[in-house]
Length: 102
Image (cartoon, rainbow, N blue to C red; front, side):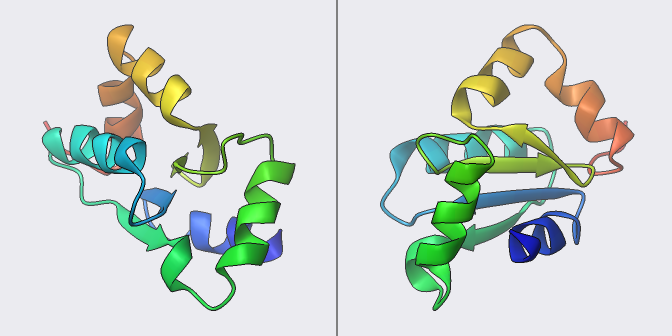
């Protein structure tokens, strides 16, 4: 769990993903569409990926990916990110995290 928290706080936007997950790709594309440059960790390509996936599920992310941290806080998975976007709250969150500038 400490590894997830540490990595999640190192950049304004962090996405835990898997290289074969279409929703992870969609969330990455959505966030990049605002001009942010998220740090993406592909769990299936990391030595500790299996344990990190279990830690994400313990945080309440089910399925485990994508899992998004913005401004050092766990925001959620694809449902939460898409919901924030639809409600017009994703962009202000990215601005607040200094992930994008307007």
